[in-house]
Image (cartoon, rainbow, N blue to C red; front, side):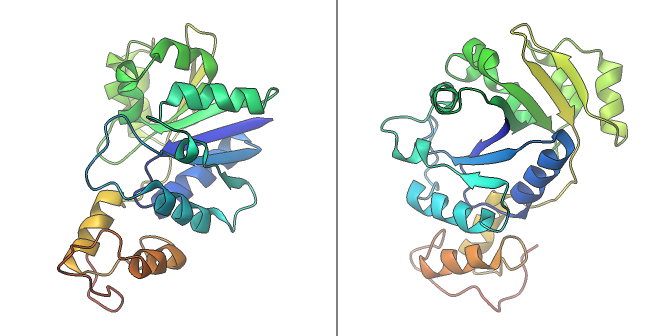
Length: 232
């Protein structure tokens, strides 16, 4: 079974996450995509809402897609949430699975700073996605990819078939473009703090959850955002 692993804070989840996951699932013939909200990231930001809320929002957002599944393994595991521990746990639970770790260019470049990066590279394949503001040519500086700069540049210029390279561990790394959707969790949180509408940036059910639980709102501005002018 081919399983895509889509981790992150999802603070909050939005249509950019969902569309990227669906395109990757279809393009690479993945049987399932596991969304795994991080429980307690090593570098925890002060504006990170509680894991129980982020997990609940991702479940709402993913429930209409039978190929999507939301796991709480990082939310319930005590201590810091390290990718290497999550991958080891998944391989114990899904012995015959081929894992494909889905992440953006910026996150792939940051892998050397993760706990046990070499071990991570031996546990999973990677699907590296284009993201607004990042370029495949940036990956020329990655210690894990041996690719010519002109090949990487061609991925930035045109929508082409995924480019694959074999890592030293024997696992594969696929570089691929997805539909650029200029939505970010940061912008959504800013909209909420300012009292602007977040309609059409994320599923309506998630929007309602944010409002009903007063998430991301300034304490002195706990106002309803429905019906206000658009932020983006």
